[in-house]
Structures are given as C-alpha cells and as structure tokens.
Length: 391
Image (cartoon, rainbow, N blue to C red; front, side, top):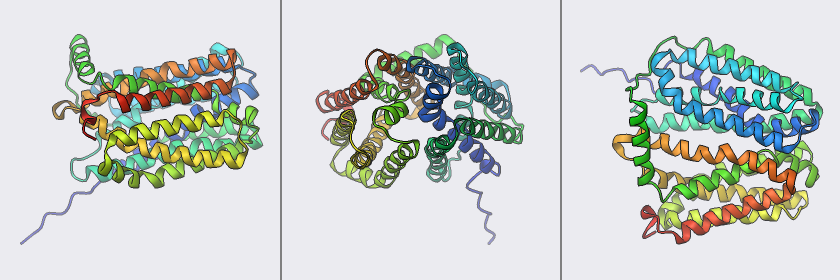
C-alpha cells in the first residue's frame, strides 16, 4: 500500500521570508528602543519631545498600514508591497542619520514605520493549518530574536561610534530590501472586499463586545510606549549606565522572560489568569517606580530580571484572555480590532512621554508609567471582566 508523501511543514520560500522578517524586526527594535532616542539627543541635539513625536509618528504609520494592508495585498503581489515598504524604511533610516531639523527627523521616523507591518502580516498568511502551532512558534522566535538583538547590538556599536551604529542599521535595512526583491512574485493573498462603512460597523460591534478589555489594552500600551523615547537617555544620563550596561539590562530581562514563559503559562492555567494578570502588572509597575530611585547597576540588574519574570507572568494570561474574546467565525476581524486598539496607546504614548520628560524629568515619566501599570493591576483585580470570573 502506497503512502502519500508528507507535506512540508513550511512553504519553500518561508526561510527567505523569515530572514527578511528578522532584518525588519532587528531595525525596528533598534530604532524604537535605542537608536532614535540616543542618536537623536546625543548626535543630532534634539530634545526628548521631538524624539517622542518621531516614535509616535512611526507607530501612527504602522497603525495606518495595518488598517490598509488588506486593500494593498488584495490588489498587488505581496513582493511588491513588501519591497516598496522596505525601500521607504531604508530611506527613512538614512535620512534620520542627518536630520538635525525636528520636522525632518519626525518625517524620517514615519518612513521607517512603513516597513514594520507588511512582512509580518504576509508571513502570517503563509501559515498552514497543518502544524500551525509549530509554524507560529517559528515566526515568533524569529520576531523576538530580531526585536531583542536589534537594540542590544546597536547599543554596543553606539558605545564605539554613533555614526557606525547608524550605518549598521542602514546596511541591514538595505539588505532586507534587496532580499525582498527575491520573494515570489505571486498574488497569493485573496481577501474579501468589504465596504469601508461596513468595516466600521463590524469594528464598532466588536468593540462593544470587548469593552471590558479596552481600558487595560489602552493603558498598558500607553504606559509602555511612554518609556520608548526616554528609556535610553534615562539609563545613560540619569542612572549613569553605559550603552553596554543598558544592553545587559535588556538582555537579562529578555532572557528571564523567555525562560519563565512556559512555567508561568502552566501556573496561570492551574491557578487562574486573573491573579497572574493582577500580580504581574502590579510587580511591573512597582519595579518601574523603584528604578526612579536611581539604583546602582547591580540592583538595577536584579530589577531587570524581576521585570522579565513579571512580563512572563502577564503574557500567557493576557493572550489567553484576548483569545477568549475572538469569535471563531471572525478571527481576522477580532485580532485586527485588538491590534488597532492596542496601537492607539502606542501612537500617543511616545509623544506624551517625551513631552513630560521635557516639562518634568525622565524619572517622572518612569514613575508615571509604573503608576499606570499598577492601575491596570487594580482594574483586572476589581473589575468584573467576564472571562476572568471564577478564576
């Protein structure tokens, strides 16, 4: 009896997509977490309000692209959409290195935002029903590795030369664009065309259904994105850490998050998501407030490890909570709404953080972000979120 050959788990071109995705996320993590803030202030002489406006613009463009990507992929081959967006991102990185005028720096940041969404969304469309979990795990590994190593490597290079860091990111953006030109020239994404007003009606319906989640979704992305324009400057100017020490803090927190994710997920399944959300967010906020007390590096390293564990406690419980609100028949719309709502906090947060740092101080911004996370903790502890009842 003949047996049918097993289908390959990944598309033949998935490795190329993954390499391009890694390059995009490397640049994205580097510019948002480190490069824009440190290079903009130290090399170009811009203030934190301008840095915050630049990061806000990058998030805004990313959100707009997420809303419009279906329209583009329905009409053009994915390769064209990806390569065009990555070309704009490359130009944005190059321009940012010489943009001493605030408006030009903000415009350059907006261009870099074009390259973030398309490659990730197209990669998701390549996922097959068979082996979905393994393929998603592969993509998330590529995503986390890229976005995590980007700021770490960039910080180390910036310790030696700011200009070298700029050209490193430009080179990686250029390589990603050149590789994208080799992607398959096929229009494989077929999406049903829905009238704009009908999309707004569906969006409003989903928001009404998930209204219990909206405050937490907005506040947590607002709190996290407030830190983006000021965190590198806070580490170097306020805490007195070098870029290498800042990279070590990021590495320690990220590694602890990865190591603790599976154990925390199992514990959340056993003891209930509510308590892990409340405890994780509260601990996250508490540690942020202790950073505002200017700890020594050894103590800051311990705090970074604790932040990583707290994030690991929140992430599985939060994803499970979101999944409970996604209707099986409207997964695309449901996740799209989540991404859009969460993106709103990311759009306004960087500008607010930069503005408050100029008006008050970067320590104040860190403390206020910590207070926001503690408020989120109380919200999930006290507010009757339906899918958390009985946990």
